[in-house]
Image 1 (spheres, rainbow, N blue to C red):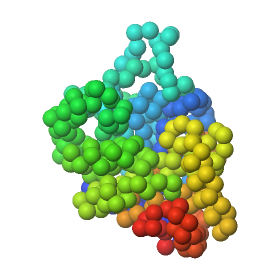
Image 2 (image 1 turned 90 degrees about the horizontal axis):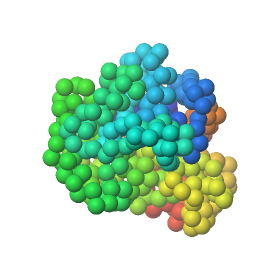
Image 3 (image 1 turned 30 degrees about the vertical axis):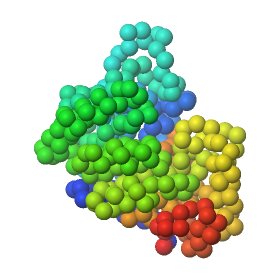
Length: 341
């Protein structure tokens, strides 16, 4: 059954409802290559004209540029007609030497240094900075961004303590006052969903990689916990950071790097099943995660208007139940994974 783009789903047990399709704005921050202002505006215009009303950003995306892009577009739209989420955990500062500043991986981003800060003061400052970049006086939800042991090394324990001792107090205060409707956590790795997210009281998680058509490793662990505790889920990378949109190939990306051969091979096999049923890989990738009972929305990224149009069209494609059955039979998706009706 095609996805109804006007369908809003309850986000866990929070007061927030999200449309099933949102817009992930990381690419507008210039990951790998700069996206020009006219192209960024046209891409957001295509999303709006296609009915997209949920936009997610973060200070990290383009070191502030993504939030500027989103804010400059939405400033002329009625505030009660759209939803915006962004993230805390990084405060931006002017670098000492802007001319020689390394913006990697945001080759097309801005010249701002990152200060990781998960304390009360850090969250409040990041929130205020985001409001200024977005040209808004409210956002609908804030997410704790990228707090995992792999990314933070020997600073991880201290930053986790900052979060649990004081950072969460800032988010709870903003929620009580009505400034935000929900508290979330952005998650890139399976271990964070299983081990870090349970340490704090969350309304939802934004899962960027661990649950896609390629990988359902958290189905019986982290996602089971979300169902049991009424925690909503947003899928942030339904294309697994690229390969499920482009298909396999020498430049195909997975987990933000070049896809290894075993992922390329699995993608080829999934694509072959899709082709046998007359369905695109992209359509299967976008519709698959929406079948999970905890998932409220997917937010694929786009850098060009045509990519937005393709995403919207892919959600309208009828997918025969036999396609999912064949993927299960061939061991390409977990046998217990919920699939679209």
